[in-house]
Image (cartoon, rainbow, N blue to C red; front, side):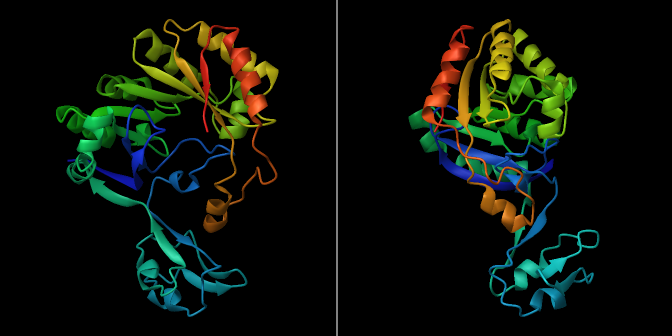
Length: 301
């Protein structure tokens, strides 16, 4: 039985597909988007987060580390990433909870048992399970087994993906998935690589394939002011989607800065520190522009 690495399970979600859903967040992502709301998802491995604002300077973590990776610096008790094994002993012993583990290994059986606890809500609302991340396709063997187990139990399945995966992976996952939430970030390949770390050729090709095969999709477009909300990108997006063999619906998701604190906790640089959310008026203008291409776009909260 496959084991996967997850970092969260959120219950009673109403924004990750139809009905009331349980969303499972898998660790690991091939992209590193500037606006990523889950920076803890990018690494495929379990890791320890340090919160210097909670640290009381007791040094217990330094003494507990079996490989001597933690040392006192001007920034607090910092772990050397090249030596840290992610064992979590420092998090276990910290009296102020200044260190915490992010991510845990789980079997498909244990995960499905967690999901099944919410079956009553699924039945009453037409909901189910959504696999998100990170990028769930990056743990394709684990994901496939989990999807199969859920389908055997008549649990509706959704996969939230950036689409950056091999065609072989997609061919394995797609028949087990009742709905894809497919992120479409921007059309220009160079800009896509600059702001996400990868080009978009594979992503667009996979989106075209899913549409051509008749799989159900909702396109999710994060609207990032000054990055992908330009007239050129919106027009290119509308044109591309209008030419698909099966035209999907679109959710426009306005940028928000709620992840800034996460970046501080992880000691990561947040590159959009001064960016503000787009106005409702701006979102409506984008939706109206897409409507010219016959694309029905809803505006998320």
